[in-house]
Amino acid sequence: MGLEFIEGNEAIARGALKAKCDFFAGYPISPSSSIAYHMLNKLPRVGGVAIQGEDEIASIGMCIGAAVTGAKAMTATSGPGMSLYSENIGLAVSGETPLVIVNVQRQGPSIGSSTKGAEGDILFTRWCTSGGQPMIVLSPATVLEAYELTYRAFNLAEKYRTPVFLLTNKEIGLTRESVDLEQVELPQLMDRTRVTIGDSCFSYRLKALHEVPEFTDIGGDQITRFTTSSHDEEGYFTSNHEVIQKMIDHYAAKIESAEEDIALVKQDIEADAEILMISYGITSRSVAVAVKKMREQGYKVSSLTLQSLYPVPITMISKALVGIKKIVVPEMNMGQYIQEIQRLIPAEVEVVGVNKMDTTLLSPDEIIERGILS
Image (cartoon, rainbow, N blue to C red; front, side):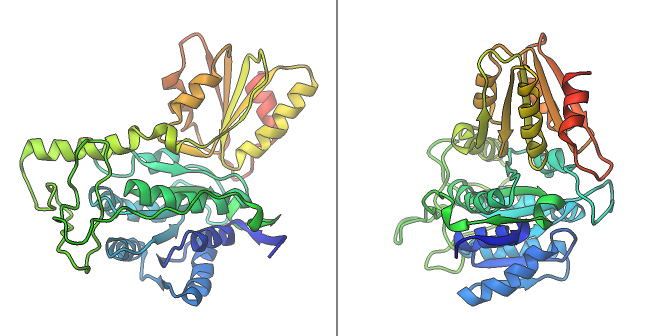
């Protein structure tokens, strides 16, 4: 189609369609509502199903139901909706259900400001279920990245049989940019590995903790089981403590062992730099300008833009720390991802958070003045 002028939320819908998403359910909530609009408009035209649920709990429940029958499913919400999703997210984790969940973040806390942006759901997304199992979380900074990372989210959901989150915010979701989606280089489309017809059906059987078990569609030719409770490799409820621990360890191992495979990081490294800026989402665009300004003033500054927040891209971050004496982490919240950085660095490295949550974007000058010159 060539050059188009579209918003981030439409790019997400288009990315989902490119990934062969064939089921969507969601409940309107600003600023994510136009994702539902675009999916309701576009998905039935290609043979898929799109539903406006009666609420968020019903919407994610329908997505899980569709996913276990073999569909590629997506739902979308904004901050408060994530709270209502949380129990069913845990169900998707324990049922090893491929699912893409979009959260167009908005100003909080509580209902906050539905027409104002922030990035306050970072840690909530990571720790939104009981038990603290690892999550896969992606974060675009542009309309083009919203398209690309939505597509990649489906691949990761299919490969690792898990819910995958796409965290954007109001500025990305509702801002229009000129993009050429056809020029985006996308990886080969993935599909979940299914049990071979005629083989014994054990939807959760493992040879190793990090292994992703083969999938069996509910409603297909073979019997399979799906339960909200602790279960064994056949899907039967169990209270055996050794079996329960093995499954919990498995949910963690399959994600944690894939850190380098999942990691998506953009690097702008300058030789001999002693300052490193680490950013994500919309704030990374201000950081890019701030880095340029600082270099023009003679400072040696490097930058990492994280497109995958979880699992934390430890390997990539650790490589960028060589020679660094100060790390600046700007965020549109009161300081969330900075905690992940602080866990990784030696005590002698200074870590500075530049935080803002007044509904306006962090400017390059604010980042420079509060993060580097202060």
